[in-house]
Image (tube, rainbow, N blue to C red; front, top):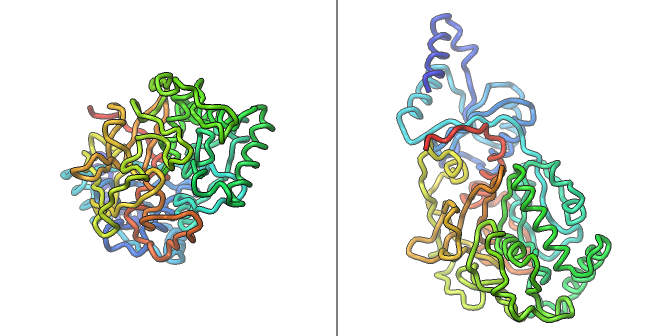
Length: 421
């Protein structure tokens, strides 16, 4: 932190501290009027080729930037609270950060974002798409054709949500096989697989999963929620194994499917047991609690706790857990959380339900890139059902759960710092 004090000292000596050092602070503590749009402002500033300082653990993970008239106008238009910071105030902020479990990460460039989602509208929404749209953050929609064409290399950050990479059409067979949307989905997926040269949807989806894994290995940032988290790993483990029922592909499950799984190929999970019965709305025993025997305390009593990391020594998980509260409301999904004993030892656990087998939020590196998994479907809709209307984020502009999503959006913009351990 010495460089900050030297800089400010020079300003004071030459009498130019007021005009040169004045900054804008976007506080991210309980005083912020709209946490979610604050992330959009930061993304917008980065798109103007203006750097932003992310003040880890300072007032909920606040943002500091140069005081430009255009930024002030944008802050006012979007209803985001900000504070003017004088040079003496800036010196005080840097001093607090230097002496506490806080640090500064420089955000340099807005990430190019892709959302993996089918072109036809399905009867559920995506929390990340809702967050990006509300925050006015740009993104592209891609699907299997773009992934298999090598288009992922055009993006820095990829999101997966309520998707199925196993070829079981989301395992909705038991409840929705006679619904028009389900039958249309099956036809569209089969058509896409055949166009891309695959006889089975399951084989095509496994190829997509491998390409996504390669994207991470080559330096990409992946963020996944809900069923995309475990479905991705299951597809990777079952690369050369038929794990799906005849109702999906016309031939039976390999009787030795379980023992043929290769957990060395997965990203986050290992030693899991498959649920191959099409009448079970669950892929494996990774999900905890399982949907067919969920033991839930109910929305009023369901919470998970974020880990507090050392900002100076572990800046990455610190960035990903920035929030104005340390305890987050729980929320369910096809994959609500991850069973602790199925998580690889290489994973960093960032959020868990205390006293439970459920882990909610995990992260790790793979190759040159990183991936982060968050269990659950929608942080502000406790039990989101097929066909429910999308969440109105203008009613949840200070959502701690949605902040976890948006931390991930800014993460690729951070200038890499050498670890101190």
